[in-house]
Length: 391
Image (cartoon, rainbow, N blue to C red; front, side):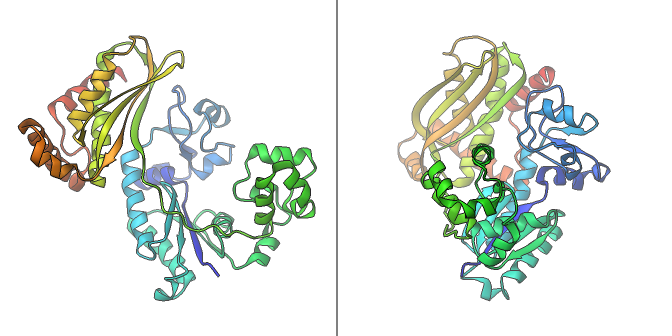
C-alpha cells in the first residue's frame, strides 16, 4: 500500500508576517493589496477567514467583509526563501515529491519510510523541524493515496496531524459530507450535482450511473474517488517552457520611462531565476495590458542569454515599438531554454558579451549568498528612485 504525506503550511504568507511582527498575532490579517488598490487576496489569517475572507477573493470584496482587517502587500522574496527551506526538509525524506504550490506538496515515502522509523515518525519530524527551522507551523496528512493524504491534512488545521489508513476509514470520514470534499470537485460541478439531487458523497455512491451520465469520463473518476479508489502517482514537474514576471499598476501609466524602470527590475528577477537553474534563454517576450484591458505580446529571439542587462535591452526594444497608450500591466517572460550556452560564449561571443556574462555570473553569486537586493546597479538604483515618486 502506498504511503503518501501531504504537507500544507498554515496560512503561509500571513503566518510569516505574524512571525516577523508578533503584534499582528490574533488579528484579521489580509495579504495581497491595500483596500484602495487593485488586487486579490493572496492569503489571510484564520482570524480573517472567520469573516468569509478567502484566497483569490478581490480585495474590494474582502474589505466589505472585513473592513477592520489589516491589509498588507506580500514579500515574494521572503516567502520564496522560506519555501525553499521547507522543501529541503521534505527532500531529506524522499526524492518522490510533487510540489503543488509555494506552501504545499505531496511526498511518497513508500520506499523510504523504513529508513526513518515509519511514516508517522516522518510526519512528526517534518512538523517539528518546520517549526524549529522556520518558526512556522504546518498541517500534515498521512494517507494510502493522494486524496486521503490531502483530506487528512485538512482535518485538523491548523498545526494538525491526521492519518487516513485505508478506503474504509476514508468512507467513514467523508460519506455524509458535501460533494466538494472530493479532491478536485469545484463549485460548478457541485452546483450541477445539486441540481440533480446529489449533495453528499453518499449520494454519489447511491447514484453512480447518474454522475457518470452527467460528467462522462470525469464522472467515472469522481465515483472512483468517492469509493476511495485513487491510483495517482507522484508526477515529476515538467521542464518549464517559459518563465516570467509582471507588475500590475494601481494607476494606469502613461509615462513610458516609468515602464522602462519596471523592465529593469523585472529583468533582474528573471535573470536571477534562470541563472539559479543554470539555463539560458533565446527569446524575450514583452507583455502589456492597456487600460482598456487589451492585451498584447511582442517577442524577440537572439543569442542565448541569462544576463539581466540583455534581457532588459530586448524588452525595452520591444516596448519602443508598441502603441503609446495608458498601461495597466507590464511583464517580461523568457523562453527557448538551453543549458549549453556557457561553452559557446567562450568560443563565439564578442568580448563585450563575454565580459557582461562574467559580471552577471559574479553578481549572481553575491545575490545567491546575500539576497537579491544585496547588490544593485546604478541603473537599478535610479529606477527605484523614480518609482518611489510614482507609487
